[in-house]
Image 1 (tube, rainbow, N blue to C red):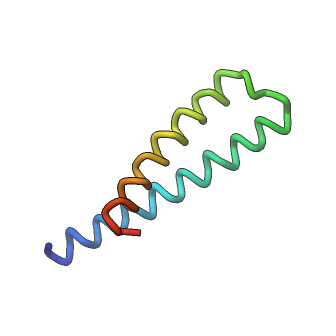
Image 2: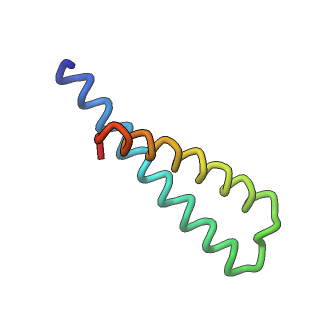
Image 3: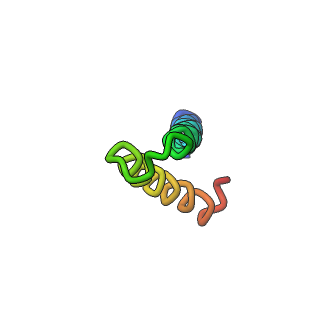
Length: 64
């Protein structure tokens, strides 16, 4: 694997981790407002699950 490709994988990992954490924070904010049944909360939940799936693949291949 060339250096540029490895760097791109690292960038993707950082971006996915950051977006995952942002989704968690936003979900906590929605939950604190009692809005766990809102469309926004459900969209965040779906995104969080997608990102968790990506992170799980990174773990499966010992990349994190």
